Image 1 (cartoon, rainbow, N blue to C red):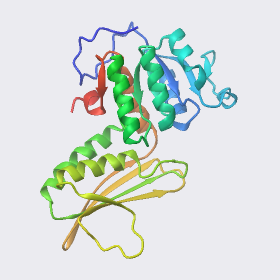
Image 2 (image 1 turned 180 degrees about the vertical axis):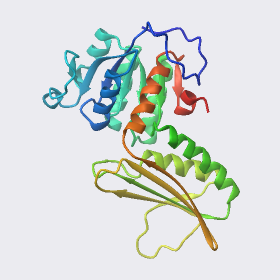
Image 3 (image 1 turned 90 degrees about the horizontal axis):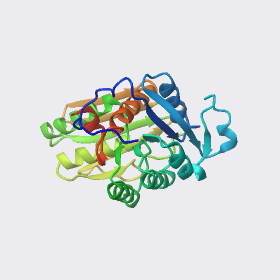
Image 4 (image 1 turned 90 degrees about the vertical axis):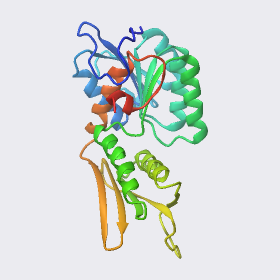
Length: 277
């Protein structure tokens, strides 16, 4: 069921209390998927319609009462029969491409927090969404603080055009893609402001500093997500840092995006639209 689109993009007002937003979660057995389910179950005005998992045997361990637990091969049937308002997708790049196609076929709006897309996959996703005229919020990071962090980077880079720039990101030891989507977005913003600087990923052997942005990935333990951008000049340096204390920072933003996208007109949006910044 699609809602009227009377509110402008950028509104973060909750839907009328008498309406319950139905949400299906793809990647439900993952750490983020599980946390999203916890948030949905304890939030007013939200209903968990289905949990979609890659491994149905593991999915049976989810403690979600009578809510259907379905394998990814059943996603089309799930969306067609249960008709959720929103699909939350935190999976892998290849799986997400297929999930978007299923959402498009069944006219279900979608929130995508998956990272690691190739340029071709990203284009494929956006084309599918636009052709189906569904609404999608796509972001490599749903933390509200990270979007303020990104905004600061462009401003500082413009003020310090001759400073060397390095990006250091750290995540838990099970994160598959590197560098993180947040670091990639930061590098793109910085390069655009700094006049199109190239990127170098780590350094090894003879590697004299050029007019590049260095990007470095750390993987270890249970780090939720740390991002530091270093601006280094002669005799001084400035660091802008965002530290995620837990995945709840991302879950809260994703739930806010789900509330927003349920009533948005068709199109591809970012968290800037959700937050109205």
